[in-house]
Image (cartoon, rainbow, N blue to C red):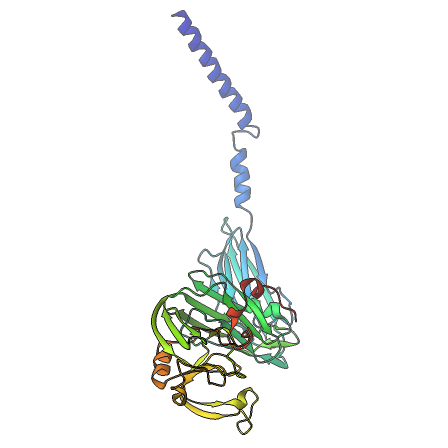
Length: 396
């Protein structure tokens, strides 16, 4: 019994000591209010506003974003007014931490941006910025896309941005162009010339991929004194994987849909002296009623080797004049020998069938034709470049 009493007494002393120790460490300022006091100081910190452009800024590019961000508070009101005093709408984030206007302002105009934020202590802070945009430029640059909104394309489809003049600031142009895919797809830009930029995936697109393209160039400086003229945008979907494997040795073209062969078509390719380039082409455009003209690649129709011939169905595969098309005059040679000027000849019925099946961005591979390799810059032949070469920076 005595031993238990001693032990209990020792525990009581320990508890008392712990209490005294706790009392010494929690009441240096009296009453244990040290930690709550520091927390209240922290909570009373006023909100801090970051406004872009800053007040007094001049020559602001109309296409650059106008934004407000707040720290230690929440935005309650943001108003951007044009020279007439009318409000210009913007977007406030759901949590009230930021506001942004990115639709583009006018040239040579003064705007006033007023932002109000409330801190944790309930006090308001207001910031006002008045700035002026750059005067209307002497040079504007437009951009065109190789796709139409709502279009269904093939798995080889490159996304091509063609500017109407040289782009001096390539980095600025790339920042203005957005490619969003679902599912996320690895890809990269490559400049094919001073006025053409192409984005392609590392590998062929997956069927069903949704692609959103936004060329938001309006009012953005693109170098050399040029500014973007207007935005362009499109949303497209990748369809079935359709590819044609055309063999100049067997004179047959195998047609595959999602990896399965659905048909083999007799063909005739380029004859000696006009051999069809070897490689993987990408379907560029389809035509019902088209005049094949050798003059488009430098051979006038009234000179030896020249021609000007109407065909019912034609599908462009290159800029240099390679098509697959209906050629009723060579049906006897199709499946037997190569007699064309470089195009892939099919019967009228087979050309129509294939054109009805195919679409922009589908793949067309030529082998065993005796021709030189297809140039990656000839049409949409981006798959002629391996990924390592595609991602190697180009020089101006």
